[in-house]
Each structure stands twice: as C-alpha cells, then as structure tokens.
Image 1: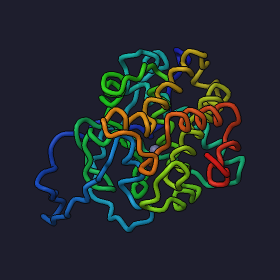
Image 2: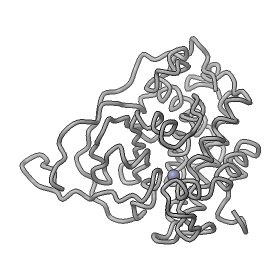
Image 3: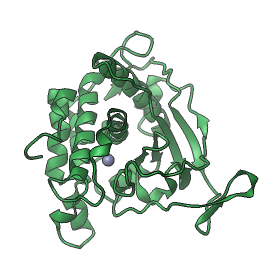
Length: 299
Ligand SMILES: [Zn+2]
C-alpha cells in the first residue's frame, strides 16, 4: 500500500505517548486519591486481548486514561517510510476514517471514528491496564484502539512475519473492524468462553479480518476527508501478499505450534491461519457485503 507522497492527513484520531509509569501493585491512583483496582486484561495469546480478555457488554468502568498527544504533520511520504510507524498509523487512520464514514453512510448507519492510541510499554485504558505483551487490541468501553508501536517488529522477529507497510496497516484495519462491529452491535454476538473453529469468538475475529480486506480494496478509491484525491494511491500484489502473510502468521494453529503445546482447535479464539487468510481475501475480493461471518454455515 502506497500513500500519495504529498498527501496530508486531517484526522485527529491518532495520538501517541501513553506510556511510562502509573501502574503498579495492581492498583492505580486517580484524581482525589481514589483507588481503583485495575482490571487486569488477561490474555492467552497475541491478539487475544481484543476480545477474549473482555466480556463485551460487561459494565467495565472506564478509568482514567492516558490521552497522549495528537499526531500531526505527517505526509504521505512519511507514511511510506518503512521506519515511520507513527505516520503510517496516522495515514492509515485517515484512510480508514474516510472509507468507513462513506460505507456507513451508504447503509444509513451512524458512525464516529475510534481513537487510535499508540503507546510504549504500558498504558491505562477503559479496559484496565495493559502492557506491550498483550499485542494490539480494541477496547469497546472507550472505543479506542491500542497499539504498541514496537509490536510490528515483534511480529517479524518473534512470529516470523515478513512485515511490510500493508502488513502493519492490516493490524490497524483489523482493530478498526472491531470498532465497526461495536458500532453495528455485532460485538454483542460474541459469547464469552465460546471458542473453537466455528465459535462466535472466531466468527467475530474473521469478520474483523474481512473488514480489513474490504478497506484495503476500497482505500485507493475512497476520496479523502475533504472530498479530494484518495490518500492511498495503490496496493501492489506484493504488498497484499505480505498482508496475507501477516494474517497467516497470527493464526491460532500457528501460534499454538510456536508455543510448543500442540494444535488444539477447541481453544481457538481467532481462527486458523487458513481461516484468517481466507476471510481477509473474502473482504478484499468481495467488499464489506462479503463479511457476514455470522450467517456463514462454515467459516
Ligand atoms: Zn481481533
């Protein structure tokens, strides 16, 4: 995926800098000296946090959050720079905002962007405290996507993904997909503890992959926020192949194999490598309308 070099981004969705101290001993202090017990986000594996650690609909009290500072001033050329993850996330968010605003409008649905919070090491969220170890996730109560910017390097070094700009943006687009599910009520269909290849957890995750694919396909045809030229020029076959490679890398079967425990489909929460690449491509080839994982007899 290549951004138009002179593109400017006008989204205010992305902020960075939620990191550092403030978390310790299982409690955090908030204004007035009150103590709130941190709801620890329990995660079984990378990417597991965005749903498995949460019970959608649970009355989780939003806690004080680190707002960070808004990311501004990035150009398309910055977003194309392999070393500039922050601007890539900014550019991706700008494009996703335009794509989903248009898509939701076509379907007469209300829509507001999520906030993308880039952080370093640890962060306080509406879902409790989180560290880099949990991987990127979406927190429904505060409608924020949390991404540790070192995750993409981990995806290459530890999990063996090829990487590439679109592989990174796929991760953001997947989390954005969970936000869409939240807006449309589809997140409520996930039953906690329901795991396995055809479970509600896996169907939700595969739909998020499918939505990511739909955005990838539509990005270069979506006018920017002001109605001008798309901020994304093109997606090459090579870039798409790298995004599919990323989806495969984080399949449950692959991660189970890597952890040395053997493959246990009943424990799947996100789908196998094959399921994940299939649904990413379903969205890429068929658009948002091809993403009804809930009514598919088999996913
Ligand atoms: Zn997910």
